[in-house]
Length: 112
Length: 110
Image (cartoon, rainbow over all chains, first blue to last red; front, side, top):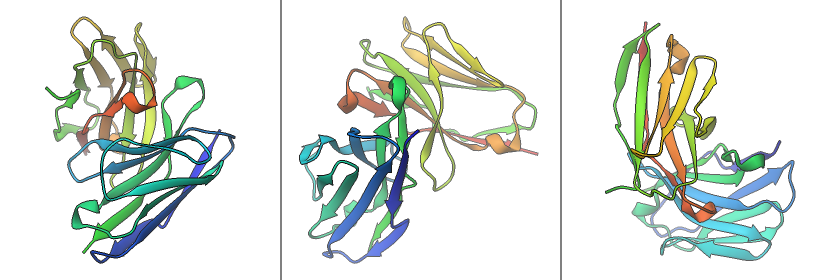
């Protein structure tokens, strides 16, 4: 089964600073990958998904961007963080057999 | 109406009790359904899929009611370790149509 690695686990960044969150996947090849954000008291919101290298689709207009430079690497970035970017960021990929998703351990971002 | 709705709780139940959560969904074309468990400040983890015929895994039973558009999760003989937030997930077709509920918080009390 696949394993997703995310880092860092927690991050405190000032408004206007850049951001780079990395996600890597083991145990599978050519996976679909997703970035979700979970804000306090809200459900998970899909931010980006990728079906392959260099292929990124955005679900919501926002201050963030994503890239997929390698098959098993998915990066979430921002040039200038906003307070509203605070949240719990989760990388995910589908489990085999259509049985839901596997999530990474997440990055808790606080923008101050 | 929200695509997926859950009672946020918290549900405070004593050890050994039976507790049930419901989750309603708005898209009648929804195809697959899941329950996830999320511990405080951790990532969600798949608890169980919800099949049309219902399914059971130990103390946990999940059911789907397509006519009324809801899924349910029943936990029997609650343990302290069951304390968590339970997320309902509905897939209406394709990876971009997966919707997560905001979760129901369960607190099992000694």
